[in-house]
Length: 193
Length: 244
Image (cartoon, rainbow over all chains, first blue to last red; front, side):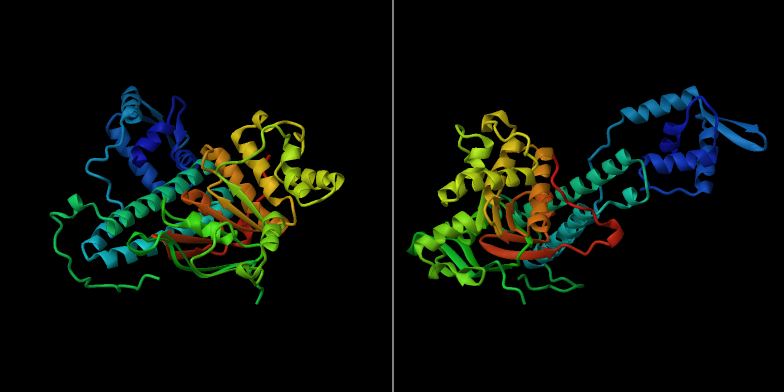
């Protein structure tokens, strides 16, 4: 999602100011995406240029509402499904893949450290309300943000477990074609306890 | 330093001998403080359940020692170990082992009655235990009348009904859906603060392990890492309690 789609989703027939859209956007996204007002007005200008919103001047302030073309663009966005090919560039995934290229022991060390860090995050989430809840966001939206963070951390932990399993009990068919192991140039190879 | 309620010192568990020997647990040491909640996680076959069985005296280690409250289990007589299983350590398994012909109350009273506690006292203590797991209003119903999550709560009540200082739970959420499993683990996580019971939870699910103060990860019979829960800011702390 871009700011563009987020603003279209918040616009209706009733004209609204840019500042209302800014606060509405932040509330609707559970406080995970703060916007500055300049970003909002710049995006609204582009939407107006593309004919997706209509602007009018009232009492010295610009107000915006969605057009029919805007509704069509919004509908297309609701229906679009995110593609996973090529896979998204996930920081954790890329780090582990790079580590595998530097040798099994190094990869296992990286997996252990990352797993411990992700588990600590998950433990913290179990013990206290999230930032969204602490900041008094809509309770249901805040709970959904918490759910997403917990489920993603679980998925990361499961994936790290699977990587560890592949490294410690390799399938012979997956061993062929691997490039030769090189020594890590940076960082340390910590001993596994 | 407080004596750990449970201590495993370099325990090894092997099955078979010679070329067919399989080492399920290879030199694991672990100390659990009174009132501490420790989770042991890892893939199937990593040795976590075997570790729990040795911790509870259900299996003897091939080498190493298991100590309960500073006393080695191997030094205890058979009667003392049986007494420990009845009165000091509670067990919760994936399979509930509830007696279908007994009510919730009677199931929870059972270990007390086997221990010679009088019927009146057993009833009072069973009611307290069922209250602690949020089932105080359904004492006379039979296990089949309850949902899977509620049946697991009865099993937990039965496990904590004596003066239990240690609860050993082996995949207690295995047969439950996620929200029910969450509620059961939240209940288990509340026991250290509410009753002072130390808990060792074996699970392959990271979401449940994360409730623990300390998470021990095992692979191929060894501990590969231990994660201690980071401190929570006072303003962000949440009270863990039994959900009804």
